[in-house]
Length: 222
Length: 242
Image (cartoon, rainbow over all chains, first blue to last red; front, side, top):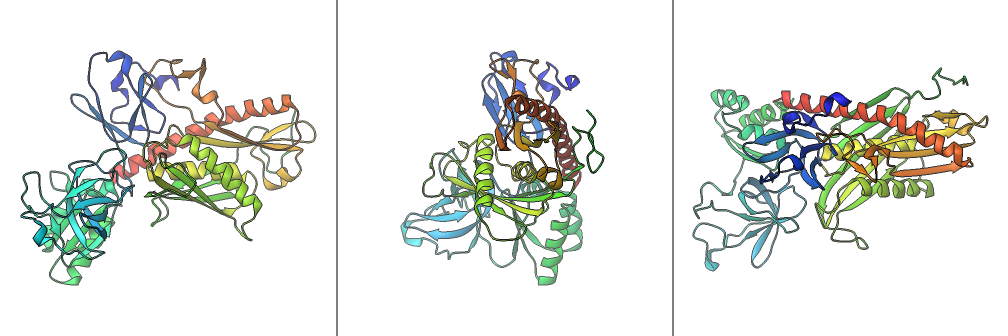
């Protein structure tokens, strides 16, 4: 397979790589800072892939592997749909389909004080923002945006939640609007919340509409 | 030396391979691997929070459950579980998700020789499907030594029973690299010349064993190419959808 090996670092960008493939040669990029996203790791003098997927490069120096999984890798700044698993004195424990449970501080709400702590039962569905997601620590979540406003985060009442892969959630959230959502929106009135962790919540006036919308989205994955 | 194999294969010819992934709806990663009539289904759940009691919490823990086609779970199944666990631990990067457990469940659908190698290949594909970080993939092959001294690859169950000795070998897959050839070596040899696991049964001479290794390594490049094509095809399929 000698024709695949070339000395230019752009040769793998946009193509599929599998774990073990060496995708970037660091010795040819002496004084640059490179940011590695999901799925890449540094291995002696080169960057190699840990997952199978497509190598993407965001200019000038951000590289990541785009792949579609059923589990979620928590990343700061993402919006996710979490389910309350337990509540402690200072925070709620939330399941976000990642390797560890996430914490939602009890005061992370707009106008939240010790006196008006919301009472979430086990099993409540919430729309949240990931604040911190560092290696080795449980991720931290919040029900406010970066400025402290509520901004649609919080409890999702009624409706129906289903699970999809992370690839489909990313597609649903991409801009321009995903064709499935556009065509669905012209026919049915519904409300939707998409979490990057592979959870989607749909609400509409009648159960019939909710089921139709949910099935359309689930089947659009192929 | 011409050999008379039941299904007309030559000495080094593998049975037809078939592999599909993402077949189980609830598992986080799944794959089905078949070599001829031997078929194995692997499912991966995880990573989930928490490790088992005696495991190191600074690393991820891999747990393997082997389910035979019929009968109760006995010593042979426990041995397969241990071999699979050690093999998978050496290919997965355990420091990425500390204090988590990843469960791999192997279900034997049909056993027609070379069962453990098929299971290792299926488990590896299922781990890729689940997105577990790995150093490289593992390709596994069975080589056996006949009573006449001949070495053949990928035996069926009948052939396996008539053999003097056999060896299950697991090699790392061949990697594509942007680096010039030779820089990805460990002590002067390219990575795919390494070996991850070797399990032998029966009595064979040292020369026979080394010959098995050579034949196995040559066949592992073909398996690597098959894996790569399969993964590339799946990824183009999923990017066209939706």
